[in-house]
Length: 283
Length: 310
Image (tube, rainbow over all chains, first blue to last red; front, top):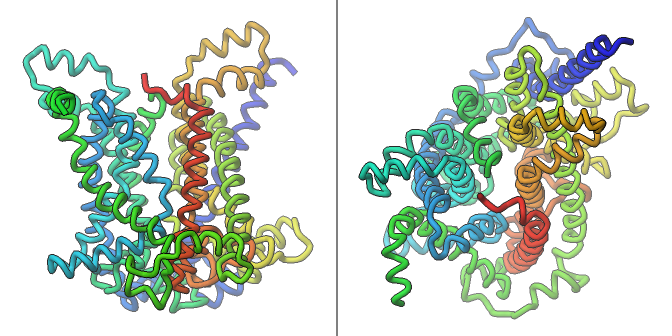
């Protein structure tokens, strides 16, 4: 074989391999969507139809469970957490990337350290703290939006700082130096010069927070007991417990919870990938 | 004290910027964690739960009980959970990182629709982990699961339909979905790293007669070491503290994952919030945290050079 021909074959083989990997990767998601649109009996019997679709599964889901409420709760809790966490991370990440202040090193270790704490260890103390706040200050914390938002903000801010710090570190210092020479204060340089070029990093962090908050089950399970504040994972877990073997409905629920994050991701993926990777590549 | 005052004046902005985060971290991490550590020295179970931190102080009894007392209710399950978690986190990390690297190399070529393929491949990472558990719990079903239909009926890889959700197979039934969920993200990080490596490096090496393996080994790997270091750390943490996927896969979120599926987190959650053995649970958590801090220390020693921010 001539080298050129060999190269063509080589490339074709790699393309086929890529296609196979892609198919295997997407298949479970496709199957989830297809299964959600089947009649349960034929689904269990292994007969799948792509023409006779049971959209009623979704209607049933919507009417049987208070799905809309869970959905709304998740949006409120995860959305607010996303905004607060990203803002905190943006501020703290900038401080860590640019200033050599006393305690910065310790703070860096603490950020990684928070990821080492088994969540289950401080779940009970946190619950007790919630009760204590209610007793002492009369402010209810269990079964409230702000209780969950507070906990989630603390949870996801460390990793967000990690992302933002990497992103800021990749921005050349000359940008601020020029602004400082022009008479900006340090904060103005940050606010007017650095923030506008950090949009991809901010979006990446925000999406990251939203996705992980949307995914949290354990703390929501313990800290919320009323369906008026429970999030989707909790609702789903309660729901699937009742509907054993109704795989059509289970898959419909799975599809419905995946769609919001899927949409978020697709809408932002251009910035997400660049924002997420900027820091890690140069950091 | 004077030093502190000058330090404050010099870096006032920095301190103000980190203040909100510090407040939250102290309230939601430091205080409850300290209480959690203290809980591990208390006889805290269903009878003393209402006393919380005023429960009887028993020193190291929880630790010695969990480790050495044959009659301890947590001990037998703990041995299995440690084994499973070790296998799970190591296998998941290794396979996720190598798959991520392999596919990143595949996609680091010029071909039509590359960004589309990359987006498609990142899809599993968007699926919430509790959904991954439900979905694969359905796919692994013995009689009507799609996996047995593909593997046995279509491909003929097994003579009999394996039971994926009981016995030894469970460890694979939890590893495979986890890998499926997490490799795409690692791949995207590697791919971004690969694209920053200048092509001239490879061309020069090729002229010097280096074969593809040598080029990969001596150019790609060293340049990607910072990304490898970070992703390895996160995968291990992810694996050791994994909960959602395994929890949701068995009995629709209410079942016991079995002797080959029970992980540290599913065990601790069951013993703490199911059997109210909070004292024992806290003791195990504290030990787990110490082990993980040891792991991070080793990790830091190995990768220290790569992690310095220039």
